[in-house]
Length: 214
Image (tube, rainbow, N blue to C red; front, side):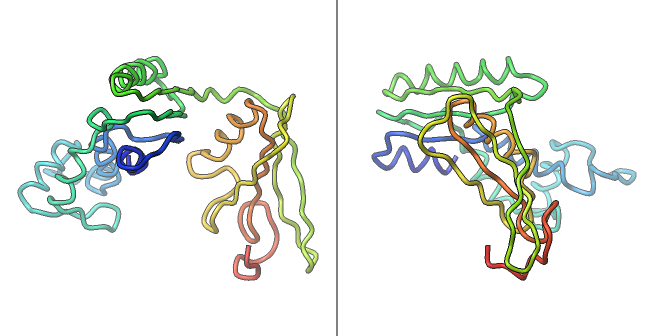
């Protein structure tokens, strides 16, 4: 949503959206589902996101996943919606995995594309279906004898340039919710070689996380 807001304010010609929340209210609802009250509800505790929102309205703030969620923040975020953002002369590439309802997601993208087209924006929806591509494991030898384990996604007709995906120290080469795996497959399907690997001390790689700067 921040990328779309920036594109509407700046002279941006292309935007890439990866698994975006086009309605931030849905993002807040997903965050609310992390509440311990919903995970292990006690007698009389809220049993839905709507009930948690009602509790939030009364108390002014609630704790979710160790974070305080306050009413002013929720109100400010709830009004953010991609349909209300005016884009012009901008190509938007929306990459998303349809999950259990891919047709519903595609239909929503089509409606949003029609709305943006009125202002001159061009929406391209790219559904991710996890189509099989050739992947191969690889190893990178480090000076101390440890190995970094990675995977390369190789397309049938590779372009001249490739991409290296670097995960932070808390993630493996697959990424949260397999985001790096899905992104690699999408790019490889379009001719881009992609390499991703586990950092030292993470996933299948050797060493200690604090030993290396990368």
